[in-house]
Amino acid sequence: MVDFYEEIEDILLEGPFKSKIEKFNTFLSKFESGDMDFVGANPPKRFTTPSYAKICNIVPPQKVPKRSNFATSEGRAKLLHAIAHIEYSAIDLALDAAYRFRGLPEKFYEDWIEVAKDEVYHFELIETLLEELGYEYGDFDVHSSIFEASVKTGHSLLERMAVIPRYLEANGLDATPMILKKLQNFSKDNFIKRVIEALHIILDEEVSHVKKGDYWFKWACKQESLEESVYFDIIKKYYPNEFVKNKNVNIQARIEAGFSCNELNIISQKKVC
Image 1 (tube, rainbow, N blue to C red):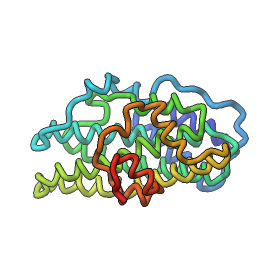
Image 2 (image 1 turned 60 degrees about the vertical axis):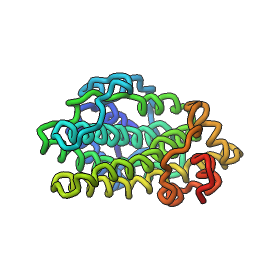
Image 3 (image 1 turned 60 degrees about the horizontal axis):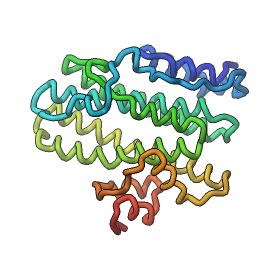
Image 4 (image 1 turned 90 degrees about the vertical axis):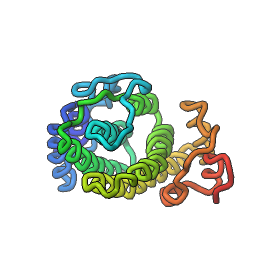
């Protein structure tokens, strides 16, 4: 038997994506065979630096390369790199949830290891396309906002589930259709066709990830005897200016992921369902 938490910690600390994925796949085989000890000899560490700091240059969000001009290889690479960064970050986010929050039902750990498995697949899809353009993950500057959000919510399952899957990842459900719309202008290009196909796969599977976060957010609400409307209090705590302006909300995807019509009306700042 191997220590579940030590195995995940080792993956979380690994920076280069090829060795991280290799370690994850080795761990996944052990996990799926049931060769795991969930006792946890050591408490979870508080990570202060993201694992990708070993391979990426981290800058403030406003200094990240702009994603535009998809007619050029560099413009396409910048878009793919930004998506790869989200997927790489999502691998660590899923694993960190399984690593950090202990003593929970077995389904919790199964859910987040399954999400991590999907995120590895998503990253590999995008990295393959990026490499075809002559680039790889780490070639462009990135920001660490998502990692910082995970650190800030590391003390609370309720806040982690609200902020990461139910807010940041749910925002991805809104953003991806907008990217797909822009790419349609180049849909006759075979490479862009493959990018579009990859984004559709990611979008479809991300709905289930947000849904898992929704399930565990609501589970945590019940454990703490809180109304589910606490979600908005948590989001305003970390993102005070959110839900102020109308935006392109992916209503159908969010409904599938567990959001109520009342929540969607508040998020959209208008009646949408």
